Image (cartoon, rainbow, N blue to C red):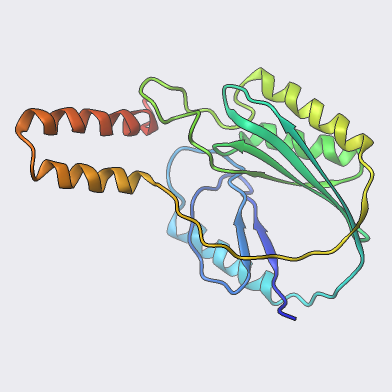
Length: 219
């Protein structure tokens, strides 16, 4: 039986996209919002911490779990918030916000509230940009960026308080998927530009800028 580790990388003060190579599953929790890029030193620190985690000895234990999902949205949350409750001697909650990153003060509140019901929370976001920071003049808001997010947190907590944990097994499977990213749009723009006149190229450029402009922080 192949043994794989699941390692969550949480930002102490800030975190955003990073790349590492590993034989295990590495999760970028995307849970401490900031504007900018991680430094080379910060990325190296992440790599070192992952290596330390990979060297930890683990063993198989019986576990109980429950899965709770609240379908809802706000100015910053796209479709849902959820929690995987785990009890294997220690109690953890993997709390996921379908959003683009998480406001750090809000994340700390999530951690505090789950601690009150007996779970250590690992807070994550899906890095979903489809609702914030995509269209022109659209706000760039992480989870916790509007009042409704706090109401949704309370709804999730209430369901978690009532959840019944049952014995579970851990498995994983792999599937190939096809995704569309902004890079595909840029490639199309490049191809069309080679065959189009000046005015069409300008029009296409304005469409592309509609995606990029909101991602620039205006000071």
